[in-house]
Image (tube, rainbow, N blue to C red):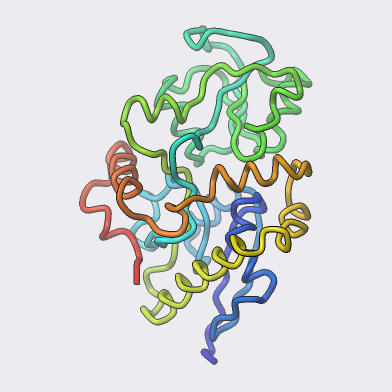
Length: 276
């Protein structure tokens, strides 16, 4: 056993819990102690900026601020086509509507959702930063005029009579023809290669375990989910957990390169990624 203890921080959303389920169920046991902390994505982003946690899931939008301290793990990313945040409102409104003076609820200042909103709408409107699960209630209570939804919210907003203004992911795909990088697991550069390789292997084994035991991990997903409907939980997993989650390669690397270029981080994307 190594004397090291490695903390992994991630969100309680079904896709992250799915990835970590083998570790949470102790079916995968590395040769050192792993502790897992679950928190809202913006809390994770703020923790990542403090650069204290060994392995952390955070928004790709903040990576240029932490790349000197962290590498991107080649397993665990939410990245693909059809995965983007959506802009919704209380009533049907054209995408070309004037947003100046309108209250727009966003799931965090450092999120990829906020980057995309700024990218396509120049940050117009009065932004209200809220935990992602509070955005639909904010619209229903008329505390916000628009909302940018991520996670389970994008699958259930119609149940509340809310309307789609646009899919920010679709806008991204049309502009770049590449998959959209939402968030990934970042690992401290200072860890030994041996530890980094074992963490990467453990994540892949944990993910493989979840794919092979979906019924067994369902109660775990449900225990952390904001939306408890079984179909919504598995739709969430099917949307955000894909072949790029298992390994960043091909189109995923190109999508990450394009995304980082827009954020001002240039160069060979592979030099930022840890792959054993």
